[in-house]
Amino acid sequence: MSEITAPAVESLADFVDLELARRLEMAEMIFPDCVEALLRYSPSDPAEALHVAGGIAFFGGVGYPANQIVGMGLYGEVTAAELDRVEEFFRSRGVASTVVVSPLAHESLRALLGERGYRIAEFNSVLIRRIDGEEPCTVPAGITIERVTPETIQPWMRVIAAGFAQDIVVLEGVFGGFAALPGALPFLARIEGKVVGGCGGRIIPEARIAALFGTATLTEYRRRGVQTALIAQRVHEAAKAGCEYAVVSTHPGSGSQRNMERRGFRLAYTKAVMMREWLEIAAARDTNDGH
Image (cartoon, rainbow, N blue to C red; front, side, top):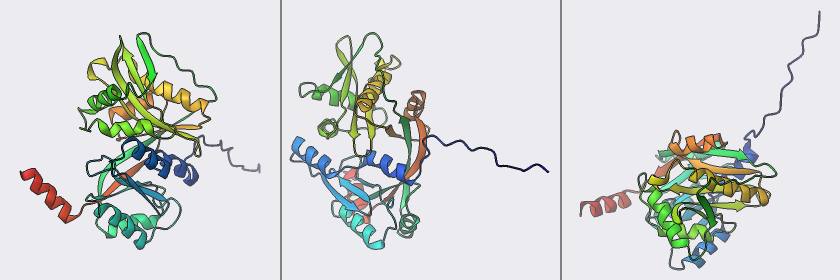
């Protein structure tokens, strides 16, 4: 009888294990050097961060769109006392406790959130693209891409806010700090001299990743290659910096996810955004809305 052997198993490219997930989640973490940069850009802002259970909680103001903790539970068990610290951090600042949960986080985090009545606020798709040693950046005819400068930061902020307006209303000033982050990748796009699109991003050298975010194009200038050019420019810069992956987070099944997958990104995993809102905060908001 001939010997039965197992078929050869090819190595899995870009397999997302715990080690890679830890790196990818750094794309959404606001580290101390980022907080310092944000405060230098706008000293009056209430930007603060807190390290807990391997994650970083960030507060950028009551109206900031991403007051949340990212990366919690990726380095082992999460205790009730650690979650208490996170909840006090957010509650004392008048916002809901929001925990972004990676599917690779320790099961203790999921158990604690369930015990405390957290609800799923949304899901996020984490998309990755491996960066080759050289990444050419070819811009379609009629489009120019420029790195943002102090002279162009205002139109850059304005175009991103306008590009997002049909999905979410965000104050222009929120984007200004993105250009001040260490390793920032802020670029704008012009057509016939007019600023028609913009993007943000950040190179995180210790993780060898480039986080891409804030990509937006004015409605009337879409389908002309602006977003493709902005992505290519940042990937080109990331390659020069020695990054191994570009990372972006989108809503599942959204146009943004479709566009990124068309440009070579693939789904690494989907994570849940879990929220616990405090009764006094909800009551105050409802009262204000009533007026």
